[in-house]
Image (cartoon, rainbow, N blue to C red; front, side, top):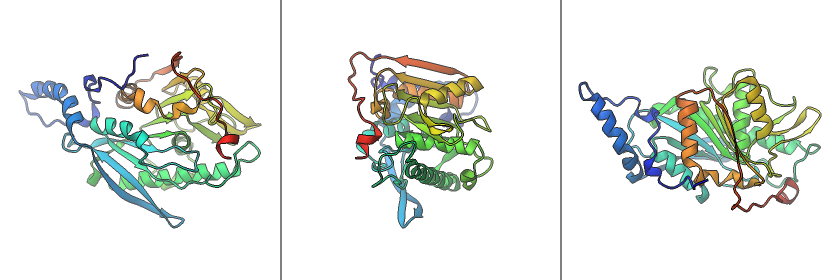
Length: 331
């Protein structure tokens, strides 16, 4: 596959930020055409601004978010792309340099990009397993709770921040991917944990770079239809399983069984299976698949297409470390 991170200026901007162009007839048609021609270049030449806010204080820890935007170009209410960093719930930061391409790309496309802190519940803990799952369950619960708190902050400050609250998309890498999948699952399954969010609010989309859901009820089933979901996962991932690790009904369910459930139930999704690749998939799509991610948002979130796509990709030139597993990662 051709490296998708090049020629970004040829990609048209997503529709939502241009929803209200304020162009009066009879020049509306010409104005729209000119804006669609010029916006990609304006967006990428515009400086990306970053501001930091505290959204909660928990366990004597200030939880902050970075907000990236290009307000000089996009003035109407903007869709919001939230991001939860990876690191096994034991390490990582919201502003790690490896995420910069992802943040800048979507800020330049007219999104408010919001990268958040969360409490690291696996710090100092032993490797999780089916029989040692309480620390992991607790870590996921804390991260989901912090994501909900950050979401509430955005909802309460949406006017000031110029955010379209009907278009809040959550994304994450590794532990962050587990968090966003779990958060949408618990909200759609009407779990008590999600009561901190308004009853009429739902996330507009989910993007998971090597994620999974922890369940005590077997393969997760949703009371309400889940958000359109984009899964990226390596079939050789031993740290966050592509398949599932379970003991009776209790276990961790990765992208493969989740996408299978989506397909059986008719829920819109796209699954990119990177054949024989390990946990690397938690990172490199955020630099090499940016237009594909944007296209997913346009098709599934903004246009609400009811597609179910399974994409198997084998890259003969990519070398991958498939040896990383919970036992050697947490020791």
